[in-house]
Image (cartoon, rainbow, N blue to C red):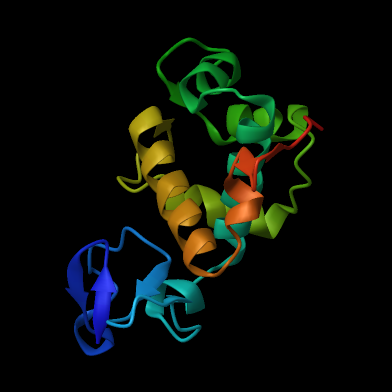
Length: 154
């Protein structure tokens, strides 16, 4: 038992639906420790999350907002991305995408099953993948500024 940003933290009560906001556990002696590797969010990183982590990293390195990239990808201008538009956009960002991973990503992101992914759906999935990456000690993959040094765009 310890603290996370001033709140008591207990592993037994931190199920998948728990509102995690930090990747570090603060003990009563003031020491900061990384969350245990068996945390449900960490162990649930799937191939589709890996693609989203790559997307987050690319956006952060380029200092581009998801909203702006979404508008570029939405070539039809209908406010949603078809699977083809999303795949084309990921490839344009030079994100290596395998067919089976992409199919899993679309199924994951298109929560309502409409066949079109809106900005809200993509943003929600992206933020969850970033959270999983941070909890897994992979913050350097999704953060723009690490330890006072900037990452150069790729």
